[in-house]
Structure formats: C-alpha cells, structure tokens
Image 1 (cartoon, rainbow, N blue to C red):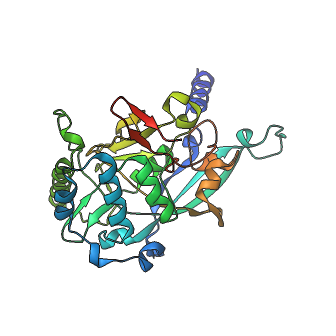
Image 2 (cartoon, rainbow, N blue to C red; image 1 turned 30 degrees about the vertical axis):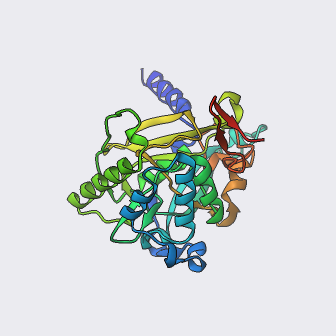
Image 3 (tube, rainbow, N blue to C red; image 1 turned 90 degrees about the horizontal axis):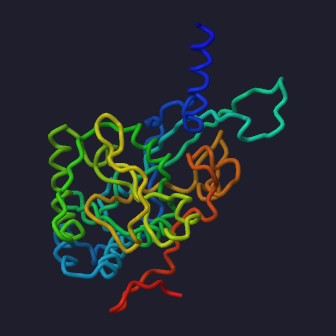
Amino acid sequence: MKNLLLAVAVAGLALLPQGLSAQKKAKIDKRAGYMEVPWFQTHNDESVALTGHEFIQKVQDMGFWDMEEQTVAQILAGNVPSALKKFRKITYTISLPVSRLKKDLKPSEKRYQKYKVEMWVLPDYLAVGNDEDFVRMPMGPLAAQRVADSLYCSLPTTFLSDRIDEVSEGRIEIFPFRPVEDRNMKPLCFEDSNNAINALMRAKGLKFGQFVSGLKKDVVLTTRLENEPEYYRHVAIYGWFHPDGHPQQPLFIRHGNFYSDYSHGIRLIYRTIKINGYEHDLRDVLEDPVLFLVVSNEKVPFKRASYDWQKPWYFTPKKWQYSK
C-alpha cells in the first residue's frame, strides 16, 4: 500500500506544470533597493504634463487610437508618478528536470538543474499624472509595446505575472464593474476604477509603489498569438488575482489588439535580467530553445517575444483592416 501511494505521488508531480514541483517562491530583494528607469532620467517634459484627472477629461471623447497616442506621449514625456520611475528587484529560483534540457541523460547525472533569476520590475501599472493625481491607464498591446521598447522593457508572460503576484506586499479583492454597453472601455471608467483601487489600498494601509495584488489584469506575451493564426492580431490578458492567489482571468486571447478596458493594466519588466549570475536580455531568453523554460510555462519558445506595434489596425466604414 505504501509503495502504491508513493507511485501515485510521483505520478502527480509529473503532471504538474514544468518546474512548479521544485520552485522556490519569488521574493523582493529589499537589499537591492531601487534602480532608476534610465528613460525617465533624460525624459521629463513638465510643459506637457497633465494631472490624471485632466488627462481623462482630455481623452474622454477621443477614439481608441487617438487616446493611445496621447497616453504614450504622456508616459514617454515622463508624466508618471515617481514610484513608476524606479524598478524594484524580484528574485526566484526554479529547478527544471534535466530531461527537458538534455535528451541522453546518464544515470550518474543529476536529475534537476537549478536556475536563480533576478529581474527588475515596475511596482505598479503604468499611469499618467503625478503623485497626488494619477490614473492607471489601460492600453492596447501595440501602445504598450511601444512604451516597453522605449523603456527597454518587456511585458510579462503568465509565468512571470504569477511570480510578481507572489511578492505582493498586500492584497485587495478585485473590483469589477458590470458591463453597460461600452462604458468599461471609456476613460471615465478608467478613472472610476482607479479611484476604487486607491480607496481599497488605503483601507488596507497600502501605498502606491508597493507590490499589491488584485489591481488589474496583465497584458501579457504568449506564443499562442504567433502560433494560432486566427489570433495573431489580438491581445493576451491574464491575472487579476484574488486574495487567495487565484487569477480571475485565465489566459484570454479573443479580443482584437484594438481593445482595452478598465480592468487591463501594463506592467513592465526591465529586459536585462540575470540567470545564475549572468546577464541576459529577457527577450532573447524568451526566444531561446532551452532558457525560455525559466521565464515561461509555455510548451515552446517565442519566435518574437513582443507585439508587432509597427503594423496597427485601422478602421474603414466597412471593417477593421490591418495595415500592410
């Protein structure tokens, strides 16, 4: 009977997602302090800066693409709260079965390879405004990728989104709005959601600049968008974690890349990461046939670990089309 239970346990571990059976929970490296976002050290145009509320009023009646342009312009001009001008360091350790990395494994060789990952992450979602008056701004994936590229950052994978959630310094319950026509896609709804989030954080004694769980869904990278042709021009979202740690939103890829609503957020990770002490470009790691396993729980590496923002959708009276 004992041997039978052991066999069942081993079989169960084999069915777990890769690496999770031997993974050390992520943590904040508080000794590392903060790292300034290089872009914002040289881009700080106060002449165009608006408060969060002023910005919402400005873009309220704009179409999607015009609002995207205005959001990107404000962020790249440095009009973001001070906490978003500094990365915080997260570390985690993952042990992967060597059999996934090497085909001909000798009996004398170890069965697991351990990897320590160090990465710098923005502590909250991208926002427009100052420390006293800001709004976390949803963006479509193309605008988000433009900002990420400018800041030499990457959007997260679902795996990295989970790691960021693990380091949360506080948790709030998600605050969903009932969909009424297209209200959830409107800037005023973005501001209402932002105000609700801030109120829930204050009630828990939490401050902007801490890692807080339950704020928004992440716009993420997934190989499904490039490997399933019908979804190539879509956006992937994931997360919005409940206090018990489970995500409200499983990976979802059915919205076109011209869509965002109040529940979407843009979280950025600096592209220079360390794996076992050596520096790597996160984008290169995601595209590497072996190393992608330490930052992704997908079955294959990325062909291109980013959204193709240089070819946006545009609208004609008849249908949405993709620019050539």
